[in-house]
Length: 225
Length: 251
Image (cartoon, rainbow over all chains, first blue to last red; front, side, top):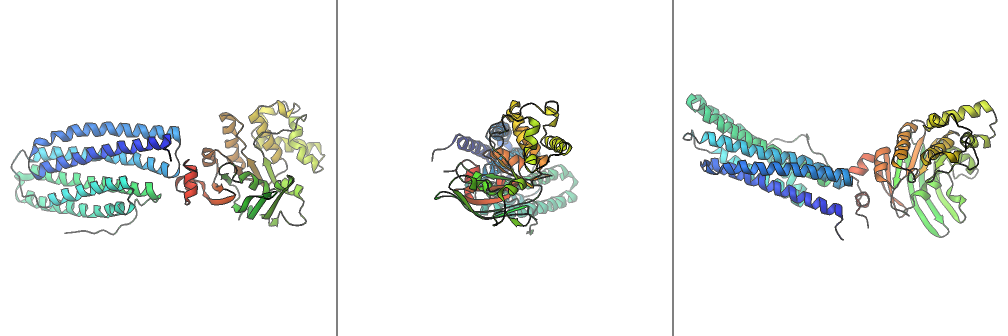
């Protein structure tokens, strides 16, 4: 069946959102790799990517507004556009979190490392995978994958908690390490927020595909230590 | 408790089976919208709810419609008395030509034998107020109903239907011949009227159904595919055919 004008607009909107998610993924990759490899030289790319993400943010909102005003979508189309508006906000904030990680990395690497990074690389891997899976479930309308992303957020939260405690111990033993220790804690916090945004997107995908709103539903927490 | 319960309604034009076993219940103080593509039987169905369908030569209906605990298809039921309980407003405003605004409103009551001028005047005023037309016509009640604008004529028809104090008002595409301003007035009116009378409206305009109704029913090829709260039907319908129709991907 020939694509209607509305379907074409909807497809273009999804493509724009995917371009934006690709920029966000690259941005997170660069910011986290810089700290992991203790090489701050590439973080400037995160700042330029953020500008592109912000541009996409405005374009997606404008397209959604147009579709709502001109096409008056209903049912799954309406759910998809509402979900995209929310996903758009989460993606933009994910871009901001990547910038925060880049900034904290730059600050941290101005002096020699205060401790070997053990849990942070695990958290990097967990968050990157979570973000990748979130985008995959959006592209493929994969509700099962979206549900697994939501559960995965508990692992990210647990890792953040562990990094907080470990870094606090280091700071307590040597107050000269407070500033750098704080940078590590902030990075863990930024990663946790990335996990939250990825979770939001996964929840929006479930809503867009099924109409089910799973936000604020009680979850069994799986803390790992 | 429902104010109208249609059970397993079948309607035919000759050998053409138009409505195929539709059942529908409507609640008091609610607007029920019936949507569906042209020819799906939605207008025929509502014409079965006041026994108007059978007035067409060769047409017949089966099933039962319970109003006030009584089946309107019962053997001793007078169809005219049913139409007093179940009023109807049509697509095109149809004030009686040659009759004043006042006479148009009270014609139904006159036909029931009411002659008291004070009663007739009071009913006319109340009905015109309920139809949100009083302020516009109170100084020209003796002018012909046909002298009004299209939107005013349609509200006059609503006032005429209300004058006999129906339980239910059936509306068959009541705004399709009106401009957006007149349409908006009728839509506003329905939200007030439903406090007095149950409303069942057939509309092609899905945005209108979404705006004004509490319950929406989707009909397709003579069958009722799905009915439910309007907010659910337009955001997350259960049936794929409903989804396809309201997203414009039907056929």
